[in-house]
Length: 187
Image 1 (cartoon, rainbow, N blue to C red):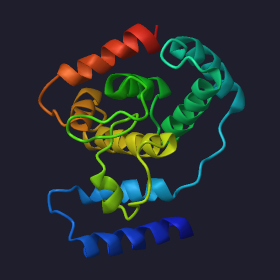
Image 2: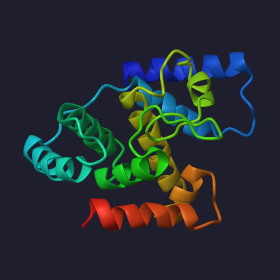
Image 3: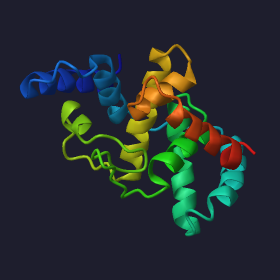
């Protein structure tokens, strides 16, 4: 375990104990979120990333008209999706369905940001000052959560997506993601 991960784990355990973490929270997910937020970015294959970026920029232009903002968002989506071993197109589909690319979106349940993360997670991982409206924070946490649910469901994307949405047992949300993938991101 690297030095940064060890510090994150110690912080996580201290914070969880101090806050009297609710027993219904998944401890493994809490740990993954804490470790993910403590990680630095990694280098990627630039050519593959640039080809993807050019293709996706055209597809996203209508929703995010400002080119600089769009390219910055796409770069972060690509890096965070790759870090979590997720297809970047899947992350774009989740963002489309969750917030329609509005980084200031707030759901009726109180979820915030591009990937609609519940704010209690910031306290649970000892990072109460982080901002879920910050693109990097939302993407890092959202991709980590989705990867966790995909692992928990042994690769069953439909069940993982339903868990992400809090609707396990219903196929409605996963079908919305699949429709977004088919019509916008994988065509």
